[in-house]
Image (cartoon, rainbow, N blue to C red; front, side):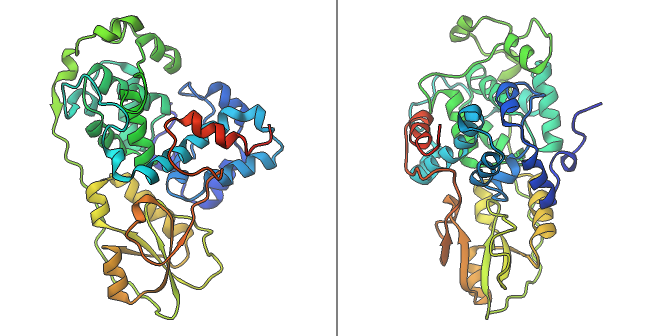
Length: 372
């Protein structure tokens, strides 16, 4: 029997079920098993990316259960990576769309290998994961790294297009986490590249495959030629299937709360009478396209959990002008720089802001705010 049959079975849309999932986190078991595809991971990433729950909320819930930070440092670190990538995006803005530290080298392909898109690389664990990915919108973090390494460090694709492909299909798609992680694997955001051979994949994915293009020693990667199966590229056309705009009703006497793909917090101003609008801007999705899975998820979740929310397909300025919205409230995020109104800070675990050249320089500052 397959572990997950569809998106809804792994990512429920009721907020109460999300909270129940948080309550069942085993941070110690997570630290020891997270690299295995059947490890004790949380399956909370879409809820974090969509601003449904915050890293700060998760950490608080875990510490309230009596776990000592020193015993669950790996778990806290993995949450902190998300806050770190956000700080890089806030600091660098559009700079994260280019090689951020070093030019990626070598590059032979500016697209993405057709065999990756078609789940036909010949690496059984990878192909199986990609096929599931298209259905569920989910990839284990180790598999994301494996795919990125195959695309960039074996297939010699520049990271940008494959990263856009993965972001498009990820239910937890966060451009900072995705783009900067791809750069980290490709050596554009790190001092060395990440590579994994077949033995590594076999170990963490429970396969026993041999005689693949990855069935080599780590020393062999520096001279590895592009396998024939990775040479053919795929034309990548990514479009967001936005719903048709329906008329909405705005009460000009009330404040207007703006939700978007990165903010679906159902507790935000819950007891305040307000217009609540899920804003889906075509300009945003033309730059950062996402698949139907993601649009369906954010639509279903907001409808289920945010009372009286309405959907507006259009630009922020168009909404404000057309409906004379007053006292506009929105949550801080790099995609919101053109919003105008009352900005509410996003919750992060630590009061550490700004750009740090490495995660561990960022983490060193964060760690001081924990009682080890």
